[in-house]
Amino acid sequence: MRFRYLPLLLILVTSLVIGEETAPTYDRINLAVSAGEEIDNDTLSATLFAQHEGNDPAELGTRVNQAIRQAVETAKKEPGVKVQTLDYQTSPVYRNNTLSSWRVRQTIRLESQDVALISQLMGKLQEGLSIGSISYAVSPEQRQQVEERLISQAIQLFRARAALISKEMGHSEYRLVQMNISSSGAAPGPYPVRAMALRAESAPTLEAGSQRLEVQINGTIELKPE
Image (cartoon, rainbow, N blue to C red):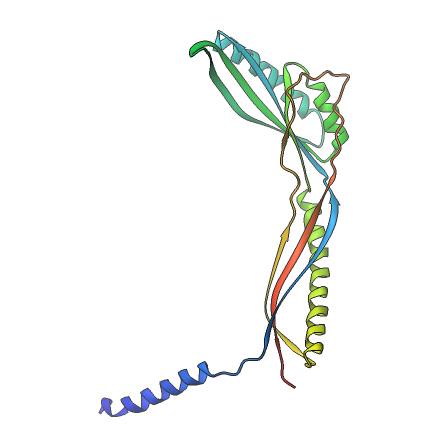
């Protein structure tokens, strides 16, 4: 008895599939808009390192550790400055394929939204420290605020352009099929600074600069027939 219903089931399934394949679709158009804004970098990061070279790795390590410890203690006294110790390296130095000495080095990283403060702090860290690199960025809080504003602007631009295209194509309405929102913009990467000893009375001059943050919207609209 169950085989008697098989042809009917096949007909029903085939009809459903054909119905789905032949579902009417309207004209689809892809759109891309963007909104951007120039914003000031409000966060400065700098790496500084202590490095000594000689024949006794243990003695070199003691000197490096002492310099880094003093630098960390000094940095922690400044409110609004984040300090982090980074890589510690002990490496042999060869000359004419012969081991001639050892080099010990450790790096610290400073970060602050107060550019003047971190500049003065770098000037204080003079005992055996050299500047490794300096980089600028936009803080997460500022980036979020700007991105939210740009998303609103970009969506308004998208809607205006979609309405214009619909009108020019002879349609009064459109339907949004899909939309992708993305953002771009990055501060320049860390740039190296020629290694130099810092003097307490000569803080480096720093200019944070700015970067352009953009929000892009890519979407598809479907024109509705009259």
